[in-house]
Length: 178
Image 1 (cartoon, helix red, strand yellow):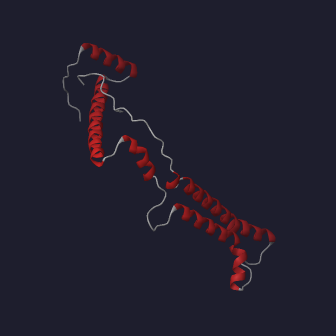
Image 2: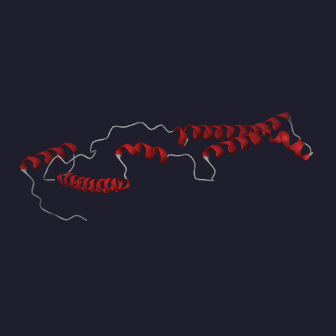
Image 3: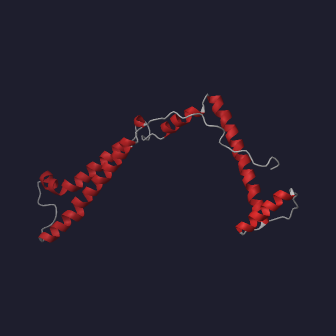
């Protein structure tokens, strides 16, 4: 719902806004609405930053602590005593290996006949590749990827670079009257 309100602006600002609205093919009302929303968002952001700076000061944190805190928060382990990503990758590799060698190992373990029913050589090859070896190799590759990713992203390998203290990153409004 829109309400009609009169606003007073300096003539130079009014002319600049009219030129921008015309160049963008928008109405002046849309441009003023966007400017008002951006001003409100900027004020909310400044309030948020100010309250977080107070909280950081209470906890004794500085801007130099930010890279270290981010590196610590990106740890790979889920929690103490839980399954880590590296362990999940190794478990996936073992599952894939069982798919690949299972049809050959199962008759030995159970003292029974062949794993697949007797069939033509082509069908036997299809069973081997499609069911066991193919799936097993895909699982092994996925497990190796997960284990490799986990080893590259472990908390022990986090390198924190020293960063210079940043200046106030939130720009001040260009117009003092806004």
